[in-house]
Amino acid sequence: MKIFQISTRAPYPPLNGGEIVAYNTIKYLSMRGHDIILISITDKKKKIPEMEKYCRWIPIQKHTGSTIIGLLSNLFSKKPYTISKYHSNEAKRIILEILKKVNVDLVHLDGLHVAYYGAFIKQKLGLPIILREHNVETKIMERFYKNQHNPFIKLYAYFQYKKLYNYEAKISEIFDRCFMITKKDEKLIKQMNPKAKTAVITSGVDTSYFSPIEIEEEPYSIISVGSMDWMPNVESILWFHNKILPQVKEKIPQAKLYVIGKAPPNCIRKLKNEDIIVTGFVEDVRNYIAKCQVFIVPLRTGSGMRIKILVALAMRKAIISTSVGCEGIEVTDGKNIHIADTPEDFAQKIVKLLNNKEERRNIGKEGLKLVKDKYQWERIAEQIEGEYKKILEA
View 1 (tube, rainbow, N blue to C red):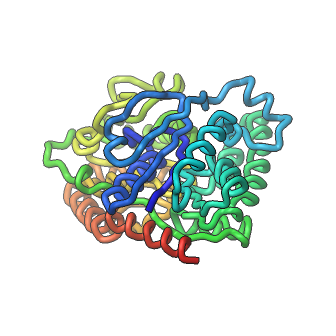
View 2 (view 1 turned 180 degrees about the vertical axis):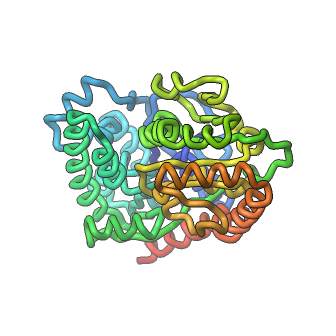
């Protein structure tokens, strides 16, 4: 098949969940013999040889960061701010120019932020269009506004939530298929709009890259991995630092926390001390994960699936997560992960794992088995291809 894909950013290096899904979708579909053209709406424009192994990559440069002016001016717009940042007339012109020259079988939109271009393509050319939802963005914004204590931020976030709900609900029905990352997300989008045509296609992990590394673990070490330019990750570290870590330190004073992830804001960087290591971006996260004894996911806001949990499972690590953090992954509390939603429970489970090597080993072993059974990319690419064929044969 000839596939035309649009993403919000260059998905290499794959540093967060959305990038991992986009990159591996392209990689493994290419390995199955499909021809892919990728457009990325990005603020960085440079050649990426690794991407060009698997697709023809065309970056369209646009600043997509948040600004105070942008946030304020959006008060007068019906479009949610997080979506409008990716709108570009230049992108529409280039997309239309390419699609008029190249005969493609279908268009794959990677994330709600570029769904706008799917509507444009459907209107202009009538091509089959697929939306890959990495989560239900509305649910993230709902949880975000509900967790705010500042009344001005809470009110602004509430209005963004209402805009996002209307936008996501309405646009989902125009697609020939919405690929949802979890059954829970599929149920949510169907509640928002029963006309949405959906299929559940989970994410996965590249087990040829992420696998157990036999190195000596650092005693009493805890690790969190996640892009620090995503607010739910920032919020999760602040919650862990303020509510959970003090309880852990009371029982294990030598406990040490590693916070790994690009672009940490000041509120995260200032946490740094001899027992809290804030690295920012790292080229290769595997050795950090391998050397730490406990992998934490203290998320309280989110939707979709946390790929970092699949990574940690594939590396045979003992994991503690909130219920929100491990949504959509078929883990079992006490078997291949520990789940905790209160600071007290979270701290107790960390202390238990830090003090029990055998428990860490058993949890990690079961986690690796789960990944090999259900979350390898070869199987997921086959499912995506099958859905493509159903759409084209309809």
